[in-house]
Length: 153
Image 1: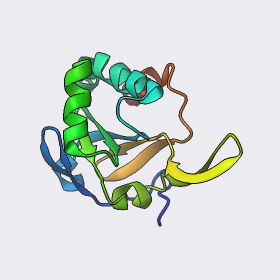
Image 2: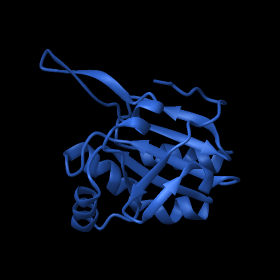
Image 3: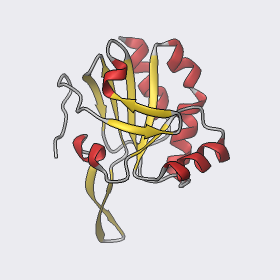
Image 4: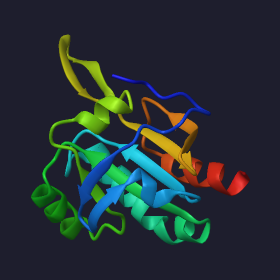
């Protein structure tokens, strides 16, 4: 497991999304917001996807592409996208390799029970380099903070 740091090269990836295959090299010279979330159609994940979708035109205007990643299947992503009319592609990482490469597969705790799961985390990647990382993301205001970080540069 690698854990990228700000300023380091972004871990390579290739994933299927609701809009086709996507790989890190597709974003050479561009800005990518790669965000990891635990599960489709759960409260926090829905709010986060809706927030990024609502701001999709602003991200596009700022020259950035937003891609959400979870271990859910493409079929689940498709239902989730349709149900909430999401405007961003969602990538499926069923074996969790990309989640692990980004250090987002972590030990979590719920009601005293420990288990492994996806840490809600976001990576701002510019031309293959990680320029900003948000870990243990709290959903309210997060998409706006990411957009502000892009616009502020």
